[in-house]
Structures are given as C-alpha cells and as structure tokens.
Image (cartoon, rainbow over all chains, first blue to last red; front, side, top):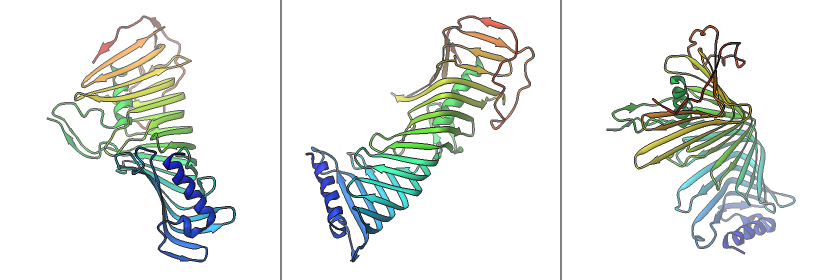
Amino acid sequence: MSAAANITRAWLLAGAAGLSAIALGVRAQQSGHATEFTTTEYWDAPHQQQIKTILSGAEAQPQPGGLLIIKQLKLRTFDLDGSLKIIVTAPECIYDTMGGTASSGGPLQLQNGDGTFRVEGEGFLWRQTNSLLTISNQVRTRIETGAKPTIKP
Amino acid sequence: MKRLCLIAMAAGSSLLGQAQTNLPGTLFTARGPTLISSESADFDLAGHEATYRGHVRVDDPQMKLACEQLVADVPQAGGHVNHLVAETNVVIDFADNKGQTNHATGDKAVYVYREQDSVTNESVTLTGNPQPQVEDAQGVQVGDVITWDRVNTNIHVRITGNYHMIFHEKPREAATGANLPPAQTNPPAGTVQDNDPPAQTR
C-alpha cells in the first residue's frame, strides 16, 4: 500500500476510533467536541514528503457511524512543488471518516491559488479517493481576466 | 469574412481574457469578469478540470455562450484558461467591433490557447451535426468545420466541407450591444451561394 494510502487509512481509522485521534491539530478538546483540527495527506512516493491536501475545520463534532460535523471547513490542495492549487471553504459539512467523503446541502466556495477563478454553489460532495468535488446546484463561476494592466513593448 | 474574424476575437479573447497580450505597443487595462453559471458541476481537484452541466451560460462583456456541457481547465495562479470544450446546442452571440450582432451555432466548440516562444496562438473550432453556422446582418454561412486561428495579430478563418452561404433578402440593420437578444436562428428565404472559400487572413 502506498504511503498516501497508508496515511489516508490511518486517518480514517483514527476518525473511527475517536475524535482525539483524528484531530492532529487539536488544541482544545472536551468530550465529543474538538476545535481547530487539521488532517494532512501526502503525495505518493517518491514525493511522500510533499503535502497533497490539508483538511481543517474550526470545530468538529462526532456523530454515530464515523461521521463528523465540521464547522468552517477549509480544504486546501497543493501541487508537487508545494504551490497552493485550490481552496475550498464551507460553513459546515458532514465528513464520513470511513468513506472518505465530505458533503453538505449548504453553500460552498472554491477558488484557485490567486483567486482569479472563484466558484460558488449550493450542495456538494467531495470524494477524497479521486479528489472529485461535485456541486449540485446553482453553480456560479467568476473568472477575473485582464485584471492587471499589461504593457508590451 | 471579417465577421468571422471578429467571432474569433470575441469568443477567444472574451473567454480567455488575455488574448491580445502579444500585440505590440498596446496597453490592456482591467476588463469585466467572465461569469459561468450552470445547474451542477464537477471539479477534478487533482486534474484541475471543471465540468459544468445543465443550462450552461457564459456571460462575458463581449459575448454570451450557451450550451449543455462545458469542460474547462482551472487556471493556476497567474495562469490562463488554456482549453475549453462546449458541447450540445452551442450558441454564441456577440457584438463585433462595428456593434453588429453575430450569432454562431454548432454542436461542439473547442477553444485552445497556447503561448510558445512569445507567440500567442488561439483557435476556436465549431463542428457537429447539424452543421455549424454563423449569421449576421448579411446572411448565414454554413460549413462542416468553422475554425478561427489567431497567431499574434493574424487571424486565419477556415470554413471547410459543404460550405454555403445564404444571403438575407434585405440586410438587417446592424444591431448594437452585446446584450441584445440572439438573432433569429432560422435564416429567411434567400439566395444560396455554394463555394469552398480558402482560408483568409485578417
């Protein structure tokens, strides 16, 4: 099994085992409640030192069946050179630690690294296994072009 | 054919923004954003590709595009949208530099943007069944493949395969403004001119 898969599996198992285990960045924790948690996934070998995704939230509440209600979701994806590629944010979502999915019927925002490509929508499903994000309704994209004056000699 | 050249500029530069970056001695200032709306969409966060589905609309200061599915690459920071594929009932409406409304239709439209050795190359290709066509105040031009290539300031227009043109009985008044409703899609009875025009350079 690849390093990334191992990490993913560990992430999921930890999530199933308990909130304290899944929340790598937990700073405060009470029974069944955590704040400021972060989980990190790395690229496959030979780039296993490079971060692929960081999933973070301001708050996480465990639910039956290995589910977590995450508040203030932020998902960041990175390229092999470490550059930030995509940022996805949502006020709330349900993260399935066993299935590796995050979903919500609520709003979501997505943007590329410099914010020139922005997307909003209602209702989403993110599949960790293939990094596919589906927005179900009212998808609106804004592409900023020519924002910077350019002078060519 | 000038109108075809302008289609390329409108469809290309408007969707892709920095189409004229290699024009010498020019200053390009901020312009309005391009907006895309659809019923749903899939984003491949690893492959950086977006697929819009259902009543897709592209609203740009210079043109409007409608289709049922649109696949676009997600530009990297500081990058450019390099590839777009619009499929199923593709309709492009735009006002050319004379303020004249143009109306192009096809089953598929592919836009490609490349920069190599300081040369910007763009192309828009309309294909499909029924045949793609472009209509303006003078008439309707139809062909199997309608392609606009742009290398720096040169625009090459090619209409190949079963080309014909249907002239309007009376040229319509030039409509102005990109926000006007699309021109009538069914051409009126008129003269049909068949030929196979060579590529033109503007």
